[in-house]
Image (cartoon, rainbow, N blue to C red; front, side):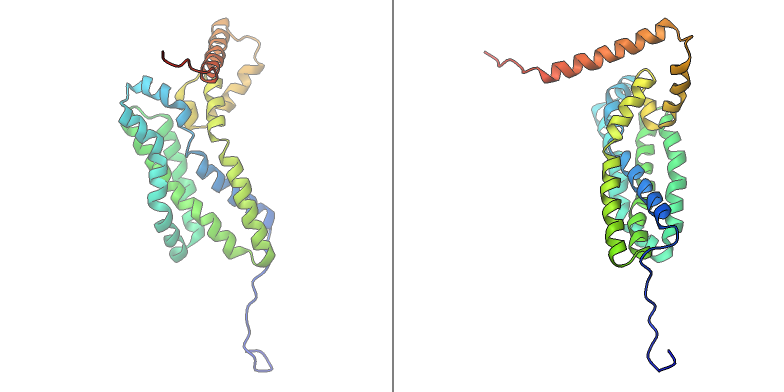
Length: 227
């Protein structure tokens, strides 16, 4: 109660402290959670060859992350609202690291499917919590702007998933495990600057680029109609 007897109402602030840093962190978490939705698609042929996988196993690898995310996003979002959004966000981020390492080092396609599903569960912890935190920390016009940036930038970054996986695979001689972790790209950078690269490695990369160009030209050329 105030001094004149009127009830006191707490008016939420337009934005939290260090709003730009907080918003950038939430956008990055949401974008990374969406990156893995399609990151394995470009590596499916290599995965099938490495594990001699059936078509069913390849389909599960492709959609396993989506299954885990779709099955958990609603219930885990409610758990975050009830027990703490920040805690659930940190748990999702912490779980995603060992899950990515498990996917990158999977010895069988079954383990890879399990890792993809667990990755979707970790995204189900983190992804809805980012939007819930934005709606809780911002108010008024600031909230509208924050949600617009979250949707636009997060969606734009998530579209780079297949491209990033393809570049990582080319950088590591098209090894499919490179699509499961982006750290392999950083390992390639010192090799680019090293002039003592062997000719065999350079030849493999040239053949890789030729296969990519040949595949693109085959898909672009019109198919002849049967007589």
